[in-house]
Image (tube, rainbow, N blue to C red):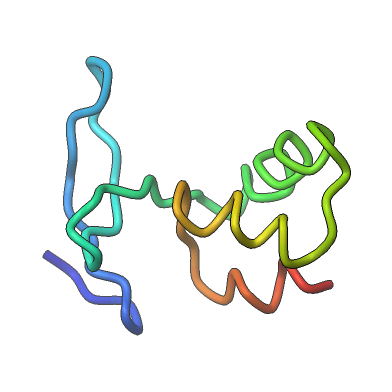
Length: 74
């Protein structure tokens, strides 16, 4: 297990795939590599064009990456 800031990463098997997940809450949240962050954000944003608070509620429980709060607010 590796700790990045407050993120506790572990290798998790989800749907026949091994993914690096944050386990700091006890619920696996897939770690999103930098290459896929904009795509992940756009996919969720385009579903309903939510404001910052609503975007945060959609993204935080599902995914994790360093400095995500700062990136979501910009």
